[in-house]
Image 1: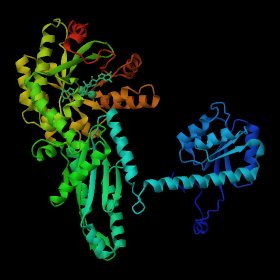
Image 2: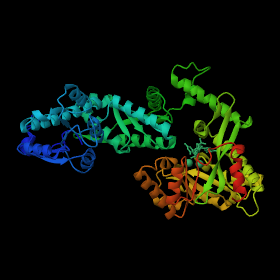
Image 3: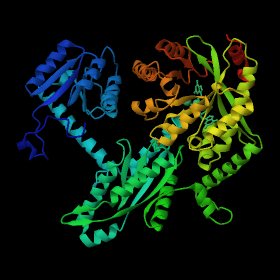
Length: 599
Ligand code: C2E
Ligand code: CA
Ligand code: CA
């Protein structure tokens, strides 16, 4: 609810005196478990032209707020399902923009102050009220809340364009970066600076300049998703925050769209004005300091401007290489860049030095509980840093292209291991299947099919014993080339699995086109199965998989309860720490022995 929307729409006559609002009616929700007192309040307020809805429980109040419009809540402090100030806090969380007046039997100044500190607008004592006092408190509270919201809006928005300001942008960027710890994502920060804005401003005047800035901000917003943020940073500078941009390729598409919309002629009065933008992009996949990111984006924008406009992506490696001699780490970004360069060099050597390892995690068929295979998961045994997980070096391997030789090593090593397991398999048992993750970059390599065939041949492994996993985002929205590649892989005889299913953006129609055999439902769905709503979501994702005749695998099963839920919902297989965490061959050998013995 926006400030000002809280009240019944004013009549035209009232609208003219907006500065001094005359309230005629308000919808009040009374939360009071004493029916006698509730009807007394209802009577008091009827004379004041207020509609009252009474409920006796906090839970009922929350349910009502979800369904109906309310202008103010009157809350009793002793309810069967909320003691003390719990009710104030619960309603504050449920409807942060709703005015709230406490109506309590307790005449205690300390409690009153606490109630206000926790978000109530006023505190009335039951024995000391009449219709006039209650209705006035309600009206004042509505006005106070409205003012509070308007002030909060002012503090966080730019007066001219109404866009978020610098402070709000930084806050949102911090939140977006923090989220990357829970869920891998690429966050783009873009610095947008208009070219030649000063000329327009000088030639046409400030009013025209203001109009231009407003139009430009609307245009930038029009190419963003609703969840993205564009902020005015001052003058003719804007900042854009976009989450889940799909790495550098996605970010550059967005940057070029911004350049395109800005470059369209703008009509101001009788004139057509032309401006262009220079855009600098900085990408982050972890919680880096926001100041560094904004400065990186600014640096990149400056480079774009020097190059005559358009966009540039900040590249740490290039920044360091651009400097001559030893880097002096003028700022933290450079130190970071140098570290990455070091990592890139180390990674290049990791293959030669045989520092890479494959861990395996068993895959369990449901409902039988039979182990049918294992997923190969890459680790780097770094001489100084110890065991490094894939999330910490695969992005860099992708960017530098090192993922191609590393990926080939993974394929060959995993196939050899699968052949070893198959060799010990019981004659009647199905040989275990090894799953290997493919990075987007590998899928774009024309040599991939040859690489896969080579790995199978070197190990003497039948193609049916190899499954390749690709993430939904790798295939979603990609060119026909990727589908062709998937078909070529299928032609070799390997199976294909769509990883992290449910986190990408594939449309159902597109899903049907991918020649995949299985989907692995992302562990974020499995982690929240206790919540009935999340369980429904999981069931829906499962239904999609089954409607497309795909085998559905639940990832990240950690608890027996999760296992029984996914089994009951009809998942075909599961994987997770409950059965075994990813570990070296030796650690999972007992489970794999069960697999090869056909039990
Ligand atoms: P993924 O393919 O989704 O792999 C599953 C990840 O979830 C693994 O993390 C695994 O250890 C972890 N996991 C499994 N069960 C549980 C559980 O019950 N609870 C929790 N919290 N986690 C569980 P890992 O090994 O760190 O791998 C992370 C990601 O790195 C993989 O996600 C995959 O996308 C990528 N990756 C791993 N190995 C390779 C590789 O050889 N090539 C490529 N391109 N990517 C790889
Ligand atoms: Ca996987
Ligand atoms: Ca996965």
